[in-house]
Every structure is written in structure tokens, then in C-alpha cells.
Length: 226
Image (cartoon, rainbow, N blue to C red; front, side, top):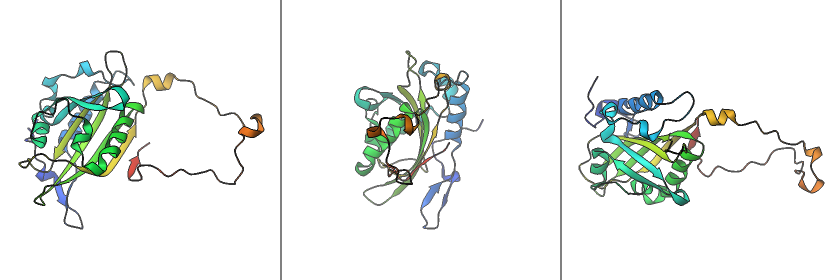
């Protein structure tokens, strides 16, 4: 198996604007494959099933995230790439600390959906240093079950197009793809059938406007894959 050194130069290219973009990542692909091998049927993997020996190629790029009270999400463990990126030990850092100020609320909203839906999430990232040096990256989030069987943990893996030598680095989100996951518990839930409008009290019936009301998405750049 090929050993990955943390850089992705051979997997990047330049778009029409000349900006480096990350095309694919064998590290993220391996993380997804490993996560899938830990699933028991349609259930999510358990946090305790992760084996560092089986994650030797991705562990330096990985974090284990905890979702605590009020939806706060913190890094419980972090690999050396994550520590180098921030210029410090990332243990205990909130996930919002990895993002630029303008994208922090969006990042937290997206990552919370990883636990609530549950879903996998992949973000395309861009960082610019004070000197103007650009860094592109891609970050993957995969939900995990805690000891009580609740999705309060997640495996997160980050790759960048080069080794970071000017920490700390924080990222803006240029694209996000979320894939809802079908789990055994979701399949066991009975389907809910909406009552016909004619069966509802008059004051509860929807107005007949000829078209359903549309609510703008709070994250218009988010792409959901069904």
C-alpha cells in the first residue's frame, strides 16, 4: 500500500482562475473505505471500533470529535497534521476554531447535521496567510456512535495541497457536500402520513395559493446528495 506523506501536490490542479484546486484524495478515500468496513449492517460504526493500527495512513490527518451540550463540537484527539496546521495541540479545541470568522457559524451548522441527520460531510476549503500564500484543503466528517449507541462522535480527516509551514491556518468553505445516511434505526421507524387538509380544523388548513411556499436555504452553497 502506498505511503502518504501528508501532501497532495500530485492530486491537485489549477482551475480557470489559476487557483489550485484539490481533485481527489487517496487519504480521504481510504478513510471512507475504513469507516464503511466498520459498519454493522446499516448501523453507524462505534467509536470504540476504531483501530489506530488499521488507520496508520490516515491517523496523522484525523481528529475524533465530540458533540457536547448545546451542540458544541470539540476535538478530543488530533493527529500531527492537525497540530501542525494550528501550531498547537488541537485537543479540546472547538471545531469552529479551524475556520475563518465569517464561516464559523456555517461550519458548526453543517457539522451538527452530521450528527443529527446523520450524514457524511465533505468540505472544500481555502486558506490565505497574512503574506497571501494560498492553501487548499478538503475535510471529511463521518459520524460515530458512542457507548450508549448515540451519534455524538465523529471521525474527521483533513488533507491539504502542501505541508503547512506557516501556522495557524484557518479555512473558508468554498463548497460542501452532505450525504444523508440510511441507518438501521431509521429503517425501523414507521412512516408518518400527513393528514388530508380536509380532515383538519379550518383554522389549521393551509392557504390555497396554487404553489407551495419555498423557504430559502440558510446554506445556499450546500449540495445534498440523495
